[in-house]
Figure 1 (cartoon, helix red, strand yellow):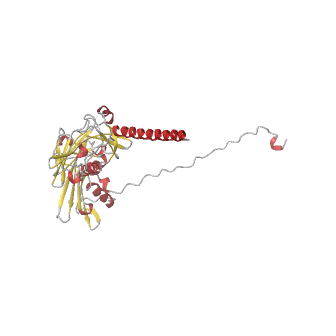
Figure 2 (tube, one colour):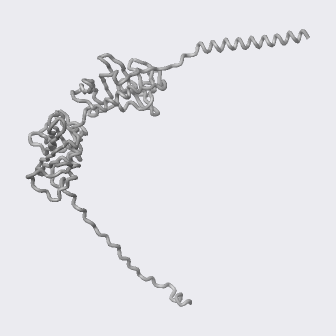
Figure 3 (cartoon, one colour):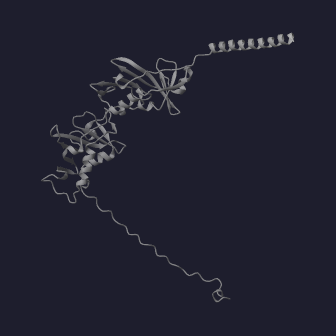
Length: 345
């Protein structure tokens, strides 16, 4: 009996020893395990940024600065920036949410487009000091690959971000030409080779200006539509510096001129735009506004509407109705193959 007790005690002791050794080994493995990799990106607010430097592959680098609460394009030219485009970029910087680590080794940077050559480089500053220096790379699974320019870890950022920075120069420029409340327009005048036409608003009704040759079939609703177009003009693009204004048809003798006279709290003001020739190899038109230096390019729809011709102010001619008569069908009797069938034979 004593031997059995001794044997049982030995077995229990061996088991306890085995458990203890296992626990020590497990702790040793845990202590030597590589720490979990994580990556952090700068946390920004829109007001934390007053300067943006952005360079994208195969596009001109731009420098944008906030001046008196308005964003300006500083390089490669000085002009007003598209405020909505800048606001979208700032919103994306504010929304950066890291949801994982995409890569930890430089050899993986190229396939994620986070190399200097492939990424969109965004340098944000506040009061001249960098607050974020990011390389924005490819989209993967609806998310965006982002690396700090001096870092070695690639973050997976939630959502699509690159589109907000990967823009052509024209998309950073303010493309608005005319932004005037249509209800403030008191008169509109058109001049071109097609004639000179002036229209005035009396109350809520548009009429031809006194003394103008009467237009047969004048349609006041056409003026309402044209005023709507003229008061919200926006460019598709900008002509290059090499384009001469005379050659573009907006010099001393423009192809067409539209003059808006407005009222309102600021008193009576005039907005004058000049329409030129069509841009070579396109249906678009050159256009300028007095007081703005840019030579704009507008759509065929806008350019065509700004060039005066009488039909633009008259009722549409009724469309010709083409009568379609039903086709006469001629039925040819088919000879009965069995002449006796009709007689029941």
